[in-house]
Length: 548
Image (cartoon, rainbow, N blue to C red):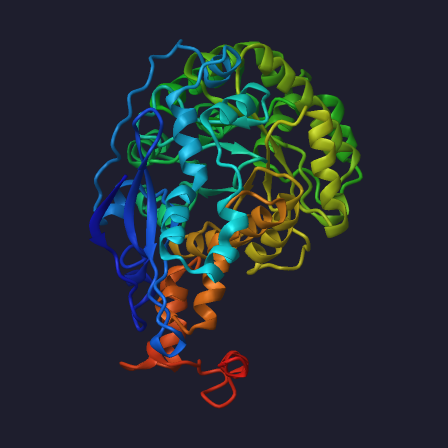
């Protein structure tokens, strides 16, 4: 285990949003643990301040957080990630290896990553000898650690996936499954109205600095190939795509001109570039389309709409369904995880949990089983707009119809009238469905339904979705999930302001908000905040009750 010498400090207020985008955003320092196969696994190490002398002056341990930022989090420059050794295409997939009883380096890597250095924290806590702290943290620190063998078992039983294309050596392995921490995906990519495709590198950096576990390049319009290449060569997290979008571009922008031949060419080209997972809208059938006739908002999935137009124009079945075996050939060769798309997800509460949505889900279950026979990893995509009281049903049905494959959901959004704040409406649903077992949440930004998000929107969306995912982890009892909250509460009760900022989801924003109204050289040493002032702080009053 190693620690880099660079510590990125938290900026104080009064900088423009642009200034804060890529500088001073990461608390703590880069720390490396080592997997059982000898690979360095990055974390953020937060060195906590001692308890103030007025409250006893006790030293505090470090807290370790996941670090997905690659080279951007180490020195803030534009260097590309370190390349890992990867097998050539045609080697056994993660699923094939797991079924053969083989623990891959990727399985060892993600086990280390999921453990959040709890063994190191336990050593620190024990060495401090603070009985109150030991009692506080023991339930989290004594919980079983993930082992590479446990990861292998969950991949083998298809309850978890490790999206990692043989051709994406820049990718640091990451596991998706309900038994692990809930992951968050960030969508980036150009549109026909984009002015400069190079801006997507800024969005990638912003996504990583805000903690995205994966990114999807949903580019349309010009420069799709160049944009994807730039993202892949700079991304230390898995990258997903929707190949149908590029298929449409190569078909001249006319859905009826799409074909299996064009799609196959696109899929192979993207596989060769290193795309780790692909959304495939193969579960939407002709028979399902009629079920949408009574919907309020029809078909809202871009991919679902394209496939529907093609089927109606040609009077044929979905060519992705008809050629699914060939899709599996490509996926197996490159170890691409298939994210089976929900082309009939609901676009309004009125349409949530309807016959069309669940008919497609049943077909996705059939395709998932076909993929399993070919050792191809699969995730299942989910809705959409769903009322609060209908969310749990989606997880129940997905696990039953799709044999427990990892569920990957957009939200779900729990109200239709949140325009401008749909990142919040979606995060509410995300926390709930995550608590029921959804493995990955696709973030929503404030621009949802309104326009193409920029880097600031990415930051807003990821902040609320990381909170949602973390809340889900606490509810599910993911080992170690409560450590950050416990240490945050302890810092709050002892008025250790810098520790509170460093443990926050958005450290720079927390620091800025505090300093706006309680700035100056002593503001961060005060034993109160500007809300209550020194005479009315309930925490201070509560502490004074037990000074003895």
